[in-house]
Length: 267
Image (cartoon, rainbow, N blue to C red; front, side, top):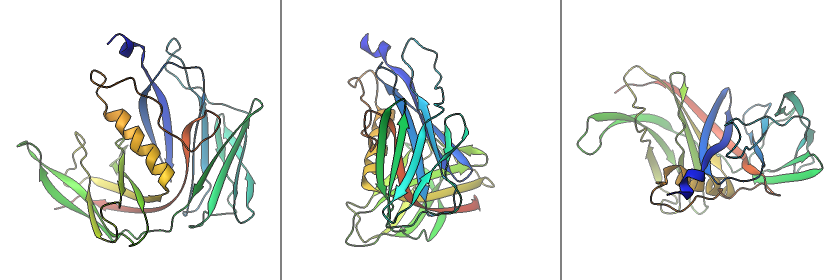
């Protein structure tokens, strides 16, 4: 119990989904300052963004200063080599002359204060999102709520990993929605989304995005979700989620496909 008092919620993960940004807070141990790097490449039009911040210790204010002046490069296995431009402190953007290609492998390289960090992610082939529908669900004899449902055909014979985000009206939900086909390979998937207290209502504007992500990124978000759902009174002190970044950096780098549906909640 006493050790739990030394745990600080400090880890900011920024997911740049087109014009939307999602922020997740995770409980981690008190530790020396580390870089928090988050970035993505998608099969939608760029530019793409890499964000770099510094973590803080328990004794410091709960803020995450951006890291300016880093050298940030994204390359691929086809000869691409793009040195990103710092458009704001800690925010680095690619140039607009290229677009992510499914099946390609992308490498993020960051150099800051003489230290080098890198991550590799392979963009999976896209899986078509057929439709988004709605269903009513009752939870533990409580009131009935409306849930969104993603409908798609999982390709057979290959491991597939998915991530979903929901934006209700102007609010991006912070809950982590992920799915793997380990028990559903080749099946038609109807994946519903339990939004906890953020229930959908008739007439709401819903933006649902589906991402095909690689296995390492899936593992990162799987562990991150476990940390978020852990009961601090029953669990051991949480560790950092495994990341595809090297040299002690926190965060992740993801190359993924993206499909988005905008619709009005109805039933």
